[in-house]
Amino acid sequence: MEQTKALNALEPFLALSKSATSPRAAADLIVRVTSAPNTYIFTELLQTPQIQALASSDEFAPYLTLLQIFSYGTYSSYTSTAGLPKLNDAQRLKLRQLSLLTLAKKHSNNPPSPSLDYASLQKALDLPSRQALEELVISAIYAGLLKGQLNPKDSLVQINSVSPLRDVAPTAISGLLASLQAWAGRCEATLSSLSCQMTQLRADVDRRAARAAARTQETHKLMENEQKVYSQMAGQSQTPAQPARRTSK
Image 1 (cartoon, one colour):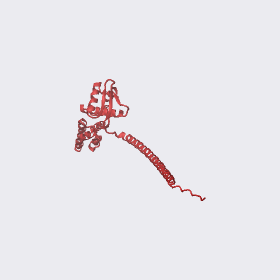
Image 2: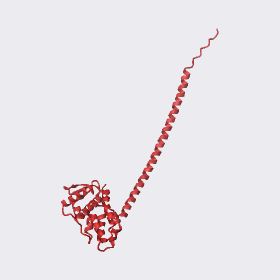
Image 3: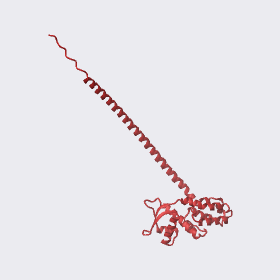
């Protein structure tokens, strides 16, 4: 649901990109889309010719880099890259939220209950205090970016689930494909193993059915033989005795 909401929020900016034929107009569009509420996915806009054309503009190329960071980078990516445009308050909040989403996703597979410590989050998100961090986490939860709880006593943020609201970096595609191929291989191996087990089970069932049929047939034969013997014995018992002959004097 959050992904659909984010894609719907991006639609007006995709329509506006068609008329952003000048570098300045494209740069302004980037500022607007990264400041707007509910826009958390940017790949489609990033791939438009008007936005990609900024790569050849010395003045406005940093805006393309900025959109790439919003798409799949983090707040530390922004602070470590020189020459980028200054962020307004809405952009700064959103980039920190997206960065929190990335950090939470990296730890979401750590059993039994993945959590992030306050100190590492404050450093990664360049936040001045614990209160600022807690306010950011709460804003991310209310925005539907993740589900979790604050644990001020232990200085931890427990992560329950993470929304799929981050684009995949081009450099990560090969690794993603490798992971998917490995997963597909495991699925095929599992299916093959299950197929062998099913074949074995069917063979066992057929053997048991054949043995049961043979026992049933043997039982019927024994019953028939017993019935014949019983009938013969009953017939003999019903035959009248012959009277003894008298001898003449």
